Length: 383
Image (cartoon, rainbow, N blue to C red; front, top):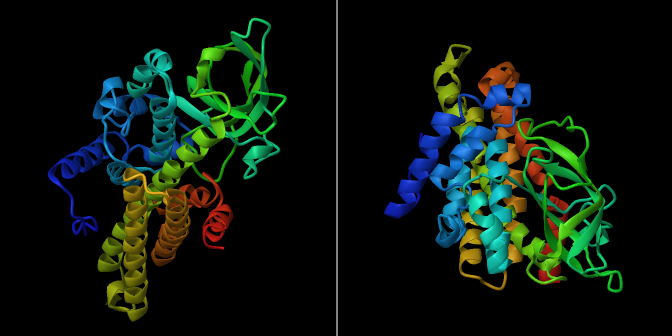
């Protein structure tokens, strides 16, 4: 059953959704379980995605981007996540950094890096969280000191839970850049091969096993001062605006996983018999399927509403992104877990792909701001 069949898409949207589906079917879906089991980071597939425009979805066409909308991106990430949420989520992180540079970087910095990013010649990671500061991003301790010539920053500190760390080529790092004003945060691009950067061990995780997650440490890294995105002190604004879109993207990845699990369930209950009846004939199963489809559609509506708000630059985009992220990741995780329950022992086996969806989606309730932080953002808007 095609749950997307009732979406009102224009011709362009249908074209790139079909393109995303084709890419996912050809390069991802049959390999996703193997990547998960072996911890394979599919860099060649990521690079291939750039040929489809998926490395700069909402980056301007002047710098090799596709120039699409946030709603378009939500549709693409959902389709890719249907094949593998982890791969789709990493692409969403890469796209978030590309947008930050496109939106706030000066012409020289964009000329230096952006086309290499949209071609996936440079794979990017987003570095905000630190070992001692998770949701409290203002408490970060990574700092960049001006050297004597004021032409470089000397960077020291560390970042934790960084997707792609060690394999990515560029790191978009949030740091303090003015010791006199401890609230000044800047966003700085740091290249992997610069001296003084090192990476911790690849973390052993519950899900997202096909993308590396490491601590990134900076020990007196000398970075060109021209690598600051925007103005010094704009980093927190850039990071938070990036997260508005990132939350919509990760919610879209949850939608893809949920739709995959619903489709699996629809096939399973039409084929599996218990006590002489197909599972679909049991009222309990009918109610479960009904709830799953209703929840999926409700979550998708909220995600698309938030994406539209971001496209239109409405003044409540942050709260709408927070609501969409919280609502969709909670409901879609529940859908995946319910699908596993319907499949019984088969759902617990890796070959069916459902247990991977459960594991991959669990972290969506934590990253890009925990769902508890989303509740704070929402409540502060109205209280």
